[in-house]
Image (cartoon, rainbow, N blue to C red; front, side, top):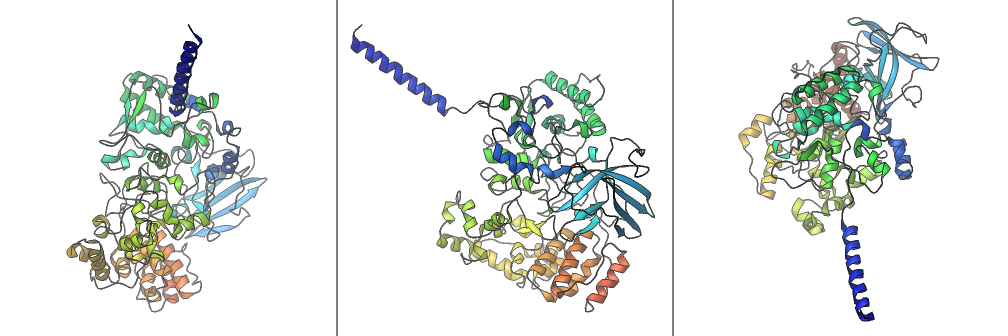
Length: 618
């Protein structure tokens, strides 16, 4: 073999090696084989060494602080012996030798003393869980099962620096007195802490007719065409994994041989036995979103996954849809918890019903991720494009999204609307004003937030959609144009965008179409629609609405009353002294004194609530 031949051979080998290296570099990294079982988790502390900056941000984030121990938490609620009265009842908040207690005295539900064991939340309010005890002594006897921590009936609300009934954070009816709520470790524990993802999959694996529990997979609440399905590869392996988890919870070891029966038993055992000691972490840890990372920690070249992964099951994307995008997978992680339709309130957006086969969007906070999955951008836009789960969102950053500069988030995909001229033609508004901001029309502020204001509706769509125009009140254009009549707004939409809307349907919604839809919504709307109208009238400083707002002080849903009181005070420029914790006759009398031009105020019709479910979060 000559030197030339050797050289050529070496060049061939070198070229082959280069091609192999290029192929290796282009190949995606291997992904963890399993990230859902208890043994798959390594703990957030294991992330510190490689992800130091993110880890430090997360330590102080609302996610991490979602559930805290009162012995180490920084708590804003004043436990200084003060008393809060609710109707004929009262709650006293004390601190004894470093331990917090809530004492309830209720005419209807009796007297109870609770030692606080959990602080829940901390971004806009603090809720509490505790165990009932016989005294404030350190060795006091616990009444009932020591593992069963109950949700206490008082929240501390930061906006008003005052206590408020826990249930009044959502759309529930008036409550007769102070009474502890659900058992914490049997209700909200899976979403507010870190537990194996496998627990959240049991209902989906069992399928239709599965017992309901909070924290299960979101897909049952999505339209049929957008649901993912879990397919079992090895039924015996699934059954064994369920049995292992039930055994860890202290449950029965005689697992049924039939997989559906094993899953049904597992759900029952988990619902009854799951307690704080079974959590992977208190609060929302890294792996609550990124999945079990033990393989990744042991071999960093192995990538984590947002999707549930295991050798014994696989994920089947929605029918007739392409494989999931990264954005869609992230949104589904968020939707494991941010899927809530809330309480027993029956109505949803798009004129839907909560317990219908395909309910519309949520009207209150914490349904945003599910709403996002129902909208038009769920495969291209991730929740994390606007929100940082590792730290508290910067208010200035969020505010910037509602500016012309924020339109860049949308025009990354919608290039046709990037220029001022195209934006003017598309929106029929001044491109340099609020009407030229994408999210003002496509993510309107129409959801009740955790504060007494409105959040954005995350089912990204158009205010001209027939389902919205003919199914919801008020017309979304009225959120900015309070003085225009329903007929004016609808006629302009038809002329600008070539639509047509049924006037008979609109008359059934609004009555007189010559009236502004915000006022018509106050008179004829559902409670969540009335709340939107109340806040919009306040924000647009519509003082002529005062008599109509005063009537909402007797709305059957207390959360709507809070919005009415804030609007009345804002439009009058003073605090009327309306105490919403008193009896309804006292509330009405104070309001009529404050707004004398209002007609006599009468209580609104009672609202029939639907049965409770695992998607409740009172």
